[in-house]
Length: 105
Image (cartoon, rainbow, N blue to C red; front, side, top):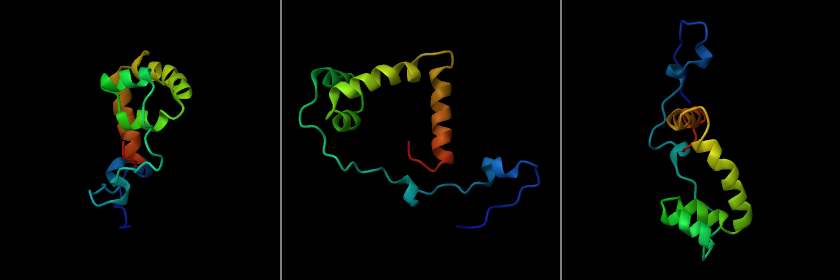
């Protein structure tokens, strides 16, 4: 890895302008390939979510345990789409954290 540039400010370790930018050829930018095959037939409730625009790959992977996945969605959906913090602000925070951790999101 190339040496990071030096910054004169006190908090240099925290500054994003010192982090190397990811390139398209970086191994961190590759999409993960699921090892578990998608469930052949989704639960009707999950299929309805996919029909409304939900991620079919995610539902196909977690569709092997539909009752557990439905409970997870009941917990996770309000965290993502409700609360005092705007949805847009939450998404920007997720994207920033993913980039800092060199994680494709």
